[in-house]
Amino acid sequence: MWFQKLLKKKFLFPYLLKLLEDDFRFILCEGCQQESPNLKLLTCLHTLCLDCLSENKPIGQCPVCRTAIPQASGIPDMDNLLFTNLQARLKVYKKIIDGVDLFCDYCKKDGEFWCSECEEFLCFKCFQAHQHYLKKESHKTKRVMDIRAGSAKDFLKDTRRTSNLSCSNPTHKSQAVSIYCKKCCKPLCCICALLDSQHAPFCDIRSETQRRQEELATINQDLKQKR
Image (cartoon, rainbow, N blue to C red):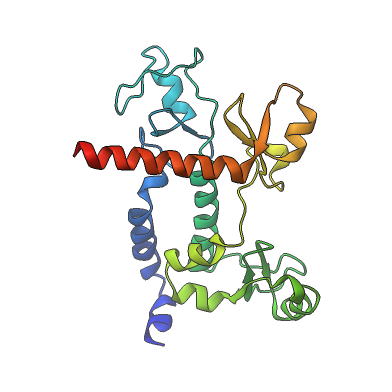
């Protein structure tokens, strides 16, 4: 109760957001340390924004570790979808903490609930309808005040199980990635795969994820032996 009362005092908001930024600095561009919607994952596993990559193009190396960037354009093909999605979810959390413009996505009344599956705010009336029609799908809905009383890590933990990575194509943002293109080394939604014949061969995103996990486990074991 005391924590919720303190949250109502506006002078605490900048302090909470500063803590939030410190905990999740790893999702910022490793070059300029700024938030960016266009983060690229290099072969050395460093993440940089398009601006930093463009400035670094004449050098042709990662500015962090000096590993060569194989693409002639200086811009890697692979988007860091994990960091991009984390940024989007943290923006929602900051919006909840700030308490500004929290309106129901259906009727524009005060948003009292958040559905992590639909990624929508709901007023009490729309929340009741939502629970009635979507009860079989087990959508996880929480009160905004309960989210506000928790931490950013709690908020991400609740959304992690139900959320899928969205397509990096701006026109397909509502589509979840389910296919992996081995040629481009990039996850795709079904629409991207169907419309662009250059994407081939394909595999299921889950099988590729499992392969990557096994590869990382092997690398981790090798590193332990070298240490």
